[in-house]
Length: 282
Image 1 (cartoon, helix red, strand yellow):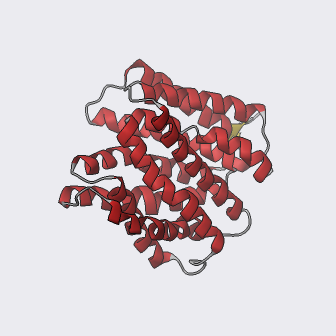
Image 2: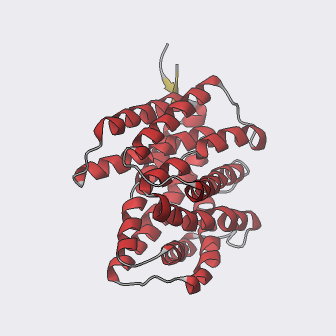
């Protein structure tokens, strides 16, 4: 029998998800650079959302004031931008990433009830492989794992899960990629920009370069690509494919002189295997 891409995982959906995952893999480095330059979570989250919102308003033609897009932006996108920075600051990039990427567990379970997606053996095997790989890649560098770390990490995971489920729900009801990817960015900015008044950080050229980068590439562009993928792929498989992000981060680290070690290579193999399992069938 011939191998072919699944209906829920066509090439036209997998490719934008992979590109989004690559862009998201640079968040940790850019965030770390901004923090080292003197910024804090409020500056990074607020200004990242603000830059993305300005660009989004240029391309949005309608539904800017849409209630459903507002819910995604306020309850999921905005909180993710802020909580994940706090998670990285408290736990380190490895632990923060592991806890964030528990999201596929949440998505696959809730998608069965909220989106009527199947929960089959293939997805469960891919989920186990993916999460095992994430743990192997994320924990190789150590980090701080306590109750605060768990709370922040699961807060990030719930926010990310909400984005995936919400966008997929609206995708199948007729919203287009621009609306789905960019609409919530505006509402996230409206939520986070007022919080700049709580900032104790500073803004300088180095931190601003990193924050502008975060607003353009891992936000504005990545969420558009992510929405494009979710128009064509079910929420569960899409969440597993997006778990390829840590592999991209691992590769970037190699170019920067980091050694991935055995755990890094093993974890990468598990994550890649999980993505193949949910994307292909005989």
